[in-house]
Length: 424
Image 1 (cartoon, rainbow, N blue to C red):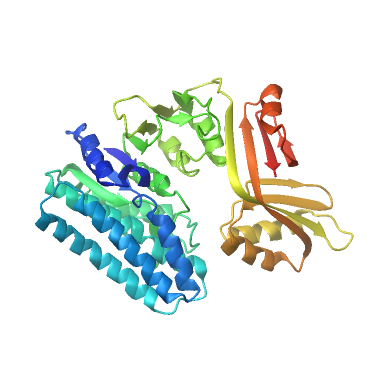
Image 2 (cartoon, rainbow, N blue to C red):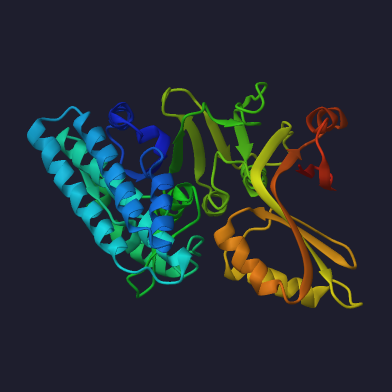
């Protein structure tokens, strides 16, 4: 059993969908579960739909939905099928868009994050419907699965926690009969469902990698391949650093560290389930599928890792100070982290002294504003947005100086292997 994950960039147009079919043809004798993200920038458009719905801007909401419908219809018309086949696929996607339009015509509730998950999931539902229908018509036999029937989560919307025992039990049902040997299974990344409730959840932005890891773990897959528009895992973002190089192999531990600090090539939660079962993870280029890419596996012992530079933009630095003469100690920190957990906010950097505490988080007003409101009565708070967090793994003094030269350093933190800067 293999698990493949294709991101939105790999299926953003008809050429990408056809290329996915070509890649699957390279593995004719394999049982493959394919996890697919929303096509292109569909999630961005769906986020606009959520915001319009939540703020009662019904005309804008309808306009965004129809633009998204048109994008997918044009993509379907670009696929090598007859007009009748194209029309049949369009009808199937229209059912989903009509559901979305009906839902957003109703008054939204006050929970933005819950609304978000119900709407944004349609990106994956539409993309996998198109892919499954297309592949079946091109004699690539497959079955469509609704990931929400298998991935069970709690109700932390936009950053749901997987309920592993329930999820394992659901996925075990795929092992019965000949379901796994009947060809290819197509399912959605990023989405799940609250146990015993008809409420969709999402696993966090870019969470499709994690979905693939969940299925790989529960199925005991031989390996997982994430298909990207890069040749493998690079030691820096080539758009920011032209000297970026591909890393041929990484240990699970180093991959966990890189993703924890924000390396965007793999979702942070992807690695650990694979490591627990020794499932190798390949990161390969969908543009050059026969190239080796990067393999993440148990390398054994100490391996020298190359310097890695990770940049997280759109960050907010928040400082807390006690209003009385007390220290910022365990009780205060417990309260702050409790509120972060409730709202599904990840602290990318923390630092504390006796009388102050700093955190750096994604500058998402729909999460940060409720958080600041919840803790605002207990501390003197200052915050600044439009910042970046730069993390350098396996750093050197020369490399650091060259990177931060000419920038304002607001906060610095270092250990033996890693240095982090909050930069204005």
